[in-house]
Length: 639
Image (tube, rainbow, N blue to C red; front, top):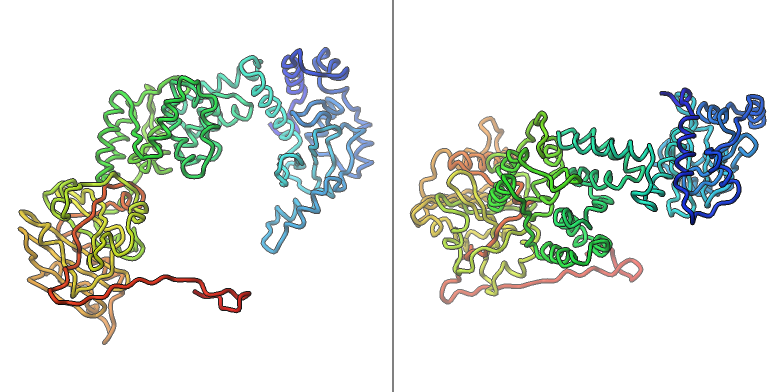
């Protein structure tokens, strides 16, 4: 229905009756309000056509269709929302002439990058007609310069006390009035709670129930639309349900799960999702738990402690809970795509905790499984029928990890280089036994950037010549494990000691070291000894042992067959081909997602450099960078 065809009277009658029914004994009201309550009508008598015509002649403007039709039903309105106490009819409508000072402020914001919409808005205050007659410092302005294809004028609402200097735009007078009806409902619902009930709230609550079923059947976009409307009317269940959809899609802005965080049934599911935000940006934990019953405060505090310490684990009963445990075990060894497939297969068996639950949002707080839930995967989860409902399963999202090793040539994950050890027939947890000199074992899983923070000085050793790596570990394909250095040191071939030999006892091991500045090293060990190796640095290539033809460095780093004299193959192209050949030769891969976005176990390796020979002298130095004096201090601007 177009705004011009909208039937104002039923809408306004319903609004008037809802307003009167919501008045409590403590609500102060004057005689006009008491009269409106008795009459069941917040409006006035209709404006005769002659009076509307006289108004248009006075203004020199033809009124927009929806406001004109409104006047034909009532010549003004009381209590438009919570902050406008009377709206203008034919006698009170007037030109605003920037009485609010809004136009002047908006013009000051304009610059050469301003959009046409911003330029149009800047002149609104001087053109607009003022609709508010009595209000709480709230202007309602109808702009004859902002006209839609249907002839409707935009209406701008500007509350000077709100702290937002940008007025809120409504496409038409009808859209503004519908928004004010929603605002009335929102304010009354927050004040009266379940006592505020009428035909509108009852219809909305039925829509919320249906939306939840739609969400469980995989129709999350349809559900979100219905819940968004109900939330604007202040229906508390709508926000709690919609927050779950929004958070699964990666949106955390103003997500607080409404009353669920104070409900003992749902709090263990949603509070862990809110806790990381508190850890990141200091969002008030007390504001989340102030409504939590005292008996449950200890649980809430324990949840926060676990999240802070990284020990929180999402748990759930039933088949989905078993899938969660299996997926966590896969994720902690870098098999994040397999972990997601495990969760995805089990989603239909997931069951809600109660009628206000529509997705396993607690997964987001799990340190190992939470990173798996990208926006695309969250969308796939929401599109999957679950909770006992049926529907069509969505097409699976693509795996996050590319095959093989070639992706390392793009500069991920360290941005400067990489080095790693691959060992065949050995589980990741066994790698410290081959690559470390202590029995400390593995650290708890952590993000790559945290692992980098663990490094200090020269590698991780107090002995200056040593180059000990902090290595992240996981599975590198069928039958292989990897140890990946999170921040490689500089390669010096004269002192380099490949771990391929000692790592390969009773097996095979592959060591690769690449640097974006023009280094590629490969060494392969078997049964405890190095079998072959090569190093390419710039244009120089050095070999040891019989390098198989499939890995011959001349295939990758030599000049192209059709090259001109002195022409070299682009380094990144050569590096990518060399990495692809290593992956094909040994059937290995590295998990990009786990190394860049996930959490992995780490440990400290043996030194990748040999100790100085007896009598050898070595030097070790450090330097500190200080800023030069600035221009005002008589210096330059560099470092």
